Length: 365
Image (cartoon, rainbow, N blue to C red; front, side, top):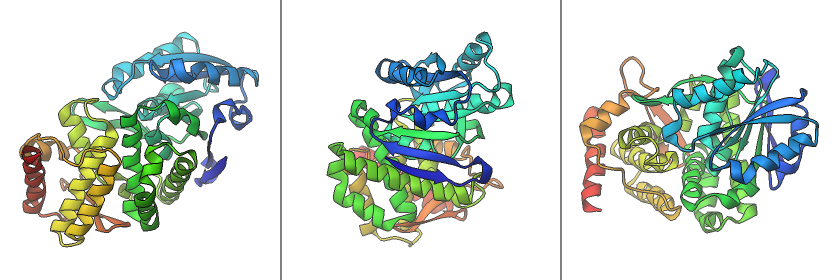
């Protein structure tokens, strides 16, 4: 097992990464002083891991109340959030009752937001069961729900007390979900860790084959990168925005296609290739760099071509992005592989060229 720390002063917390951690009650004992907890999960994860977690909690004298939600990004909304509140209120859960998120990014985001807002804040524990959640969404305290007009537009910064990433849960992950997680792994290499990007080029086949050692290394390296960024900029006033490489385009894809039709990681992959294309048009990286980036996403089994929403639709959806400031779209772009910047001076003509090129690639595809 590896242990990393997200350094946020008195709100610092550990990330435990390893196989079989769902059975290790001592990792949760410190943050479960009370005899009761609520576990929020979904219809896909519950049959696989809920009973195992409940038994682990029972072994340290903690009784648990399961809250089982429908599965999928299309359910990450206020109606589903209210199901959590309904269950907590019906069972008279108190301010000391921790909420445990057992599932992927959607469950983690919604449980965290419920924890931030129920009784104005209750303890929160992340047990991510997808690669994407283990390397990205479970770390850093971003919580929230989607709105019909935009992804993650309603939420709060609310840190967990512990993150428990059991790599054994990845054995039941569908291939497309594993690939979606790899999109966020590749992102860390692109924005701030060139040696990791090169390692991924050499080890992608091992990751796709679910080699335990390779997966644990990739998860730990990704979490370390994220923990450093979050410790430096918890509320995204500066460096943390770099973690959104590809997300301005990617969120537009997810919203435009209807939540749940494209996985988040798939949108990020196609969006990152568009961001690389735009970086090239600004003269920052070469066509060879763009091809190298595209090749790694394709090897991971991810879409390299964005869907055809139409240029105006993309512009409209991207105008709703959380990074818009003073009416200007701000993009995370690449100065080189391994170094990203936030840039708000993109000429509209170049942005349109990137979008038109992406749309042309669809018709040629």
